[in-house]
Every structure is written in C-alpha cells, then in structure tokens.
Length: 232
Image 1 (tube, rainbow, N blue to C red):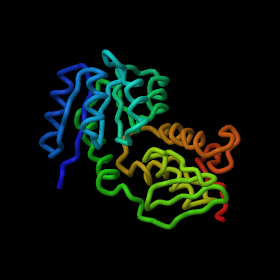
Image 2: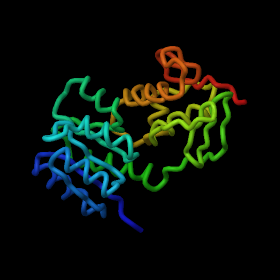
Image 3: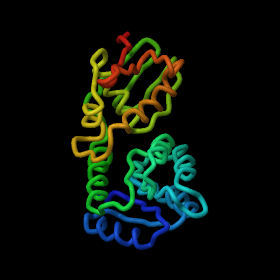
C-alpha cells in the first residue's frame, strides 16, 4: 500500500526538520519546500495527500499559493501562521485551507491533526450513504462525490461536499456546528467551530442563487444549520 504523501512548505529549515522527524517514523512519505514557488511546483508534481503550508513565504505567500493550488488540487491543507489576528485565519480558510495552526505549535498536535485528516480522507473519504439525493434543482451523488445544480456540475472541495451531503441527508433537521465538526472533520478534530461557517459560506456561494438569502443552507441562530430543500 502506497504511504500517504505529505508536503511541508515553510521557510524555516528548523520547522521542516522538526516536523519531518515526527512524521517519517509514522510511515509517511515526506517532502519539503522552503519558498512559495518551490512549494507550488512540488504540489503540482507530487500531488500530495496533505499539505502543511506556512502563510508567510518568500517569493509567493501561502495565501496566493493556495489560491492557485485550489484551482487544480483537492489536497487537505493545514495552514501555519505566526500571526494571531483572526483575520489571518479567516483569510486562510476563505481561500481553501481545511484547518489552521498558529505558531508556535506543538509538533505532536500537528501530527495528530495530520493523522486524523488522512484517516478520514485518505482511507475512508467516501461517505457510507451512497443514495443519490434530489432536491428540486439540486442533485447530490455521494458515491461519485458530485453535485449538480440545474444539470450543471458544481465544483466543491472535499470538505464542502461532505458538509453539504451531511446537511442534505438530514434535511429539515438542525445540526449544530459541533455535530457537523464531528461528522465531517471527525471527533478528534482540534480546531475551532468557525471553520464550519467559513466552508458553508463557500458552499452557499456555489449553490445558492443569492447567498445572502439562501434557499438550501439555512442558518439557525444560536444553534447551527439546517438544509431546507425538500426531496424531489
């Protein structure tokens, strides 16, 4: 069985060495890059399963790198940032990061997040419920992991698809952010609940006629989210 590929992009050699030293004994195939252009080139050629990406990089910062990469890759991305401002975390998530970690961080925590992510998406990425769901103008095929609106395919990331499918298969029910985190990221997710809001914001932009007044993904204030489409 081919070991999962992990790409670490960071301009601090000490971090590359430290994280690599923790990951390689776990059996992962680890690759590194020290600047943005090299990281983008490595991501394109290696097609890693998971990328650990620093937000502050020479040549091409992590935000721009991820923006370009998301046009062609669905790899799970954990973004590293030395900044503590909430806006930096939100920007990282808004351009396609799946999780984030603020420096300084515990290598053991990073490894735990990597193992949890690969367990969910590397070995058991397919949702167990393979029933095709039809909701008026929206169709969700969990086995093919595809979504169509008005017979046009909607381009969703892995997490965006899983969030939409989880809500849709419980249509009419309100699911809390905690429930969505557990079902999509897993019970061992270490991050914050706001990742749910950011990724569902992406989903709305892709499936709603008017994301500000959604027809499908409805916010239930103080509780969570509800999928409002009735099955056709």
